Length: 490
Image 1 (cartoon, helix red, strand yellow):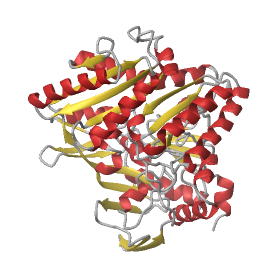
Image 2 (cartoon, one colour):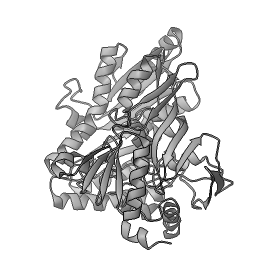
Image 3 (spheres, one colour):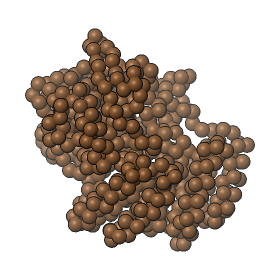
Image 4 (cartoon, one colour):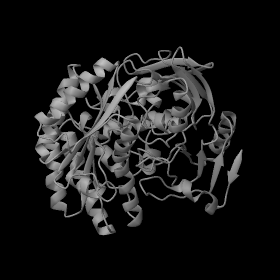
């Protein structure tokens, strides 16, 4: 066990990419699961709050402690086994997605649902039910979890296998390691879009799915087994620039329709508005001066014949929707694909750097709405964004009707105003049947939006579930629920 008690030795563990700053008395770096169990037992007796830190790549302050101590899982970094025949990997929670890919690739395997941030840890990805650029084709990491080990705040442990423990409608009733568990899930209905706001609930769910996306509030995932996929034999990427924004949106609608009826099958479909392109021009000179929007896509193919057919199909779609093939980039070689990949991933980094320079907390949406309401939501973004007089960019997973509208406040006054507009965006999204958080979770900085999406009864049921597993409310305190209201519940 490694322990650090001087703040200057662990100050980097007191923040994430949201730029929220926290505090803690010490940092613990366990080498194995049993050390975690011992610490939890001791802290439970002393009523000391503890927060789990993974790769600290989150955007909502979930890993940022506001009191107590921090546990970093970075030393739980063993890749236990890769089974080429079963296409599975068993590994500890502190393995980074980058390391997972590097080792899996040696067997011609990959996690296609891998979240966008390669420095994130597997445990953190499960805790937030992370998805990424390929969410359009592959969904979230939830779909690929076969097994996981969970340490509860009571110092008990779960060994969970997919299909092993499921609820009967909304009730779990089972025995694990000679201990009886019986509890009910909240009664609310999840929106019909991807959502990472509050606990994942439904009738007859697997217990794994309750812990996946619980944001480190119900238990600590220490290891898992994930399903992998073969590296696609053929793939290409595209970056298509449009002079007219509406042409870009019509292009996306057509791609979605063709993918739905399986005649295309894009795995990624991403959007960048004109302000995003203006920001990116600082680093990418190939962006046409006339471009007002761009769409990024990734396409896989099972063989060379299908690859050639798809190349021609995309070329026709690009020209049909008034984009220029000469100005667009169809990336076929590894070097070209890397250039397009860098373009997609640079914007979030530039936003985070801007916020650090101006000492501002992230002010961004993580909203998804049903596709039939996407245009209405998009128009609302543009109207309110312009009204605010604060600079903004709007980009992200348009294939899933899920954009990241980011305000770029330069001072505290703009930051406060931005958060008022974020509230309006969340109210609009929920009125359209959407979610206030599609992939990044609630964490600490988005707690006010939870009550926009759920009733007081819904939230109370969530908190009762939290207290079932964590009676003293010590794990991940202030994540999802404010500590004051949480401690009064029950």
